[in-house]
Image 1 (cartoon, rainbow, N blue to C red):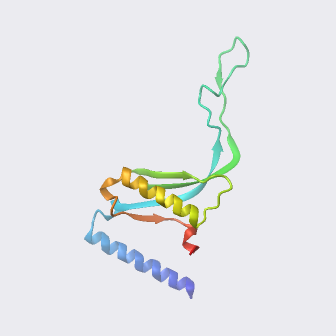
Image 2: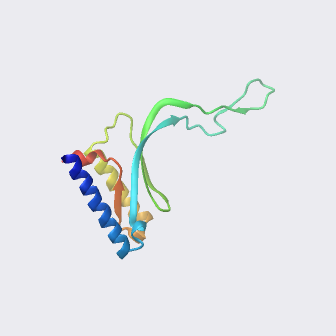
Image 3: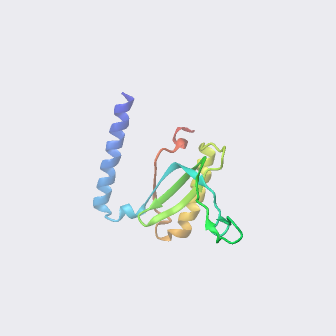
Length: 135
């Protein structure tokens, strides 16, 4: 029963959004969306720092950058023109309601600086926010 209610709620929201698009054709330009993902760490050396000398007479060669076994979670928020905000989750940090609130506050400040045209009227669509289950 609960699954059906969730589907009905999603359908109603989608219909509302379609109706809003008919009234406000530029509505999607106000939507900022985000997601989180796990990414592999890479050694942040510059090209110059990673050059290797094999012998005194040889020329330096760029060492191959290899993927680390460690992964980092990144939260990326973007809109129709590109990335608005990104946040690397510190190792060991749980993405709980307090951390998510911190990220949202930083996002709000960033939108006010970068997207002044919609700073007072933007919509956030974020995939799987654990804060939804928090009080």
